[in-house]
Image 1: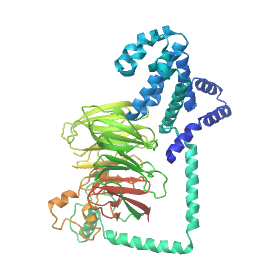
Image 2 (image 1 turned 45 degrees about the vertical axis):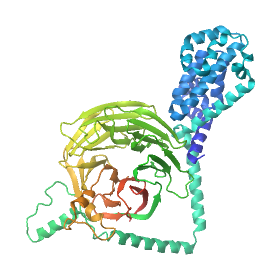
Image 3 (image 1 turned 90 degrees about the vertical axis):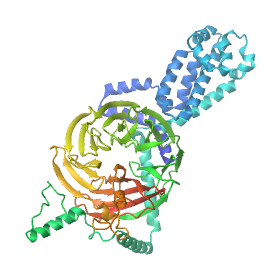
Image 4 (image 1 turned 30 degrees about the vertical axis):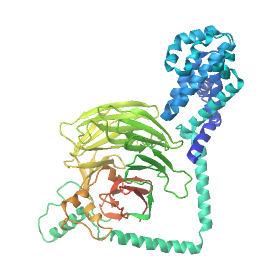
Length: 613
């Protein structure tokens, strides 16, 4: 089993220990009434401390003691609590066990001579069972059979061996469910301990293997690699954004006394070189797919990658060659339109399909469960974002694929399988694209329409908190600043602006990312406004929401206008580095921790590791 599954299982198995810790804590704090309530809840615990044997024994005891109503109610609870979260392929298994326990009840009633119990059960449920047909037909009349144990169709069910086999199989089935559960952080202390021990072992191993000679070689190799990267993108000092060039032009004009309109727009982003630059320290390429990759996302920690290709193959894998996490490959029978990781439960991945269903993939057990359904009138997903502190999901869907004038916003509680809030937004102006972002606690959402309008919404009530008219066409990406007092918007042509959330329509800063100049930097043949570039080529150098990613500290932005990632400093708009090229266009990018990924139509994924200099 993978380490995630082992950790989840260990967390479940440590429930008794955690219960004891809670008792000690409550006693230490003097919370006696809380302790009494806790003990009362434990006595009524239907999960039986997540003991599969206790749960199964409770079920079988209810059946053999002819408490059929209690059994059916308990089975209903287990179905809602556990079985409903399983992949559809397990539904048949769940139904099979329900059928067998019902037959155990009927056998127990015959043995006890309580045939009246059978009649009452059949009066209530016989019609439903009869519609299932098949081997249920003989059982409908078992109360009238004089010696069922001697009949071939019933004989096996009266043996001790059948009862033992049923119990063993049911225990095994219930035990497989627990590792698929999203457990609270208090139950993952063992996972954290193992992670720390694994890191300590790796550090010790690296220290033992690294001699003075290998250190010198590593430094030389790093210097050589860095020179290659610098040659690959050209000198950073030479690469200037149009905003910097405009400022230089303005300075020159002022020196000779010429009039200039540079600076008339409020708050142009400072154009001095950044105090720290984000540079690529290592870059790797992975060929995980045989067809073009349409979606790729880092997990919250950046340890895992979920990638989905044009052949509906979803892979979960780690870019770390020392990782013990095995690759998972799923051939899906639906088309994925969007996906995002749960930011609280790092092993859960949400997939939005073209029919409006949200599927949850548990990467611990590789179980897939469709449980959230969007409104059929708005099936086209425009954005799906996960909250950082809860299992809440924001979905922004439109009635038509290319027209976002009619939107449906929803907040889902993925852990409880229910919708928390919904709002429909209608725009009087035709819009053809919208991007979205959530703040750190998920209480605020910002929407950016491609027409230039930005809305700030309270996700608890979906009331509009602020409106901004950026007067910029083709907005394609939006993100909160680090202090969340402002938002940063990006257009398809690479214009970056920052807007205050405290004062409507106040621009704090603006610049233009040199995506045309940068995209040619890898070969030294930059594309600028003065070159005779065809309209078709320039049309490729445009951004969308899937090819824009801010770093977690919001100090840098990574964009992919064509076949490589370009890294810019947000304050100065200076390009600080660029990845190597893919053989085809980049379809999507992502950034987590200190690394970025770029997925391409050629089936490759590039992982770049960064450092600040």
